[in-house]
Amino acid sequence: MELLTVKQAAEILHISVGAVYALCATARLAHFRMGANQSAIRIDRAELLAYLQACKCVPPNRAVDEPRSHAIRRATRLKASTLKHIRIDKIASPATPHV
Image 1 (cartoon, rainbow, N blue to C red):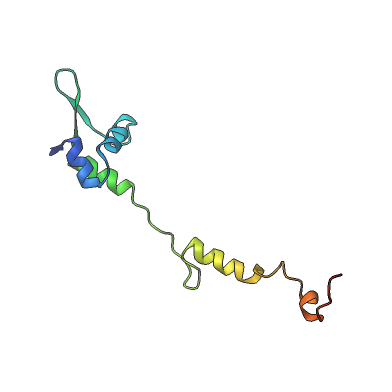
Image 2 (cartoon, helix red, strand yellow):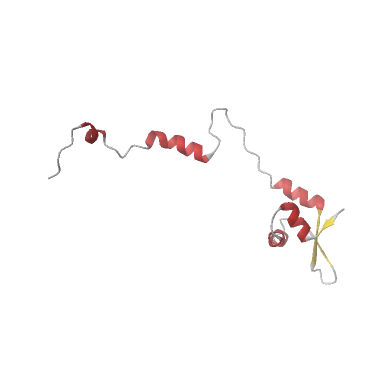
């Protein structure tokens, strides 16, 4: 078992020291409290890697022609509805002067 300090764990996760303390305080990251008044926090490297693995997001399997991102889906949706506010009859007829 290799025990890491909060600073070492933060460097491995590429997050702030405060974020590691918050993970420990909310019991999302397993840790040990050591010392006379239990003030020193140590984190097992295996537990840290297990936490990191649990945070992994795996995208769902998609059909080949399905858009990959929200922005692409939104753009695809907007193509059909982009010009709904324009009245074709006003454009097609000759301009009449407004009096």
